[in-house]
Structures are given as C-alpha cells and as structure tokens.
Length: 191
Image (cartoon, rainbow, N blue to C red; front, side, top):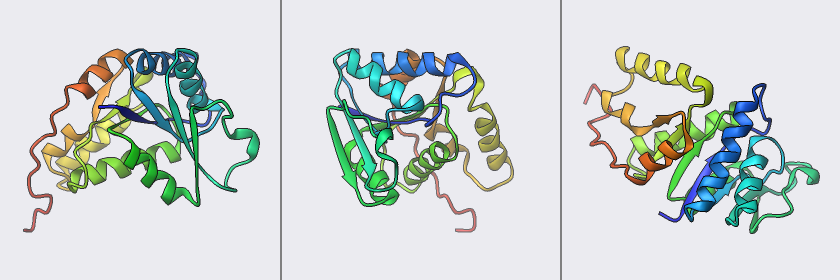
C-alpha cells in the first residue's frame, strides 16, 4: 500500500476536534510513509490534512477540476497538482491513484465520494479498504443507517464489513493496512 485517498470537508466544522484529528491524520500518514491523494484544496479539513502531511515531509497529490473552483482554493504547495476536466474525472483519477480510502467529517461531497467507493467495493470493482475517521461519533448515524438498510432487506450483512469505522487515526490506519475484504454474497435477493 502506497497511497491513501482522503475525502474531507471543505470546511473545518464546529468542533476543534475535527481539525485536530485531520492534522493528526496528515502527520501520521506522512510519518508512516503513505502518500496522500485528495481534492487539492487549501481550505477546510482538506487543507489541514495536506498541510500537516507536507509539514511532516510527506507527499501530497491534489486532483482539482479546471475552472470549477476559484483559484484561491487551490493548494499551491502540493507535491503534485493534477488538473482534470470535471468531478467525474477527479474521482476516477483519485481512485486510480489510491490503494485505500479514508473519509473524515464533511458534507455532501464527502458523503458522495465515500458512498461511491463503497458501492464500487460492493460490486467488486475494487477490493481496497475504505475507512471513516469517526471523530466525535460524526459517522455514527451512517453506521446506524447501514444497519437499518440490512434489516430492511436492501443490503446484505456482509456489506457492513466494507467500511471500517474508527475514532483514532492510528487505529484506523492499522485496520486499513491489515484489511481483508469480506467475502461478498449475492447482492440481489431475488436471484
């Protein structure tokens, strides 16, 4: 495992703990020799992860759609910045470059990125680990929603093993490194 894609909010959130854990994750990834692939912004939790990793001597690759974001949002100190045409190309390139994924707290964009890579895992498109840094229980409602979907018959029980939930960056990274994909059953109940 060489590179980890980090999905994170473009805001820092209301609790200082979100920012603290983002910085801790960036430092940890750099200290353990992992490169970061992320959305390329200099602001929010995205920027905090990148800044912390770079300050710790890590490599950070940003992937930013041309003409989609204002120039002042683009992080100018990255190891590498790759410009793409649109959001679909951004996610495809980030996934191509990454060996694993970690989602920090964030909003709709972070949720969408997280669920897309988990869906790809469920469909067998990849077998990469997907983790969420569950800072202050941020992702607990999603964990409960996934269990509810299993109980309601829309997901298989084995799908719950496709996302690793952890509150501490070090523990999450340990789980990602030792990840063994769950054996998936037929996703379609009617077949």
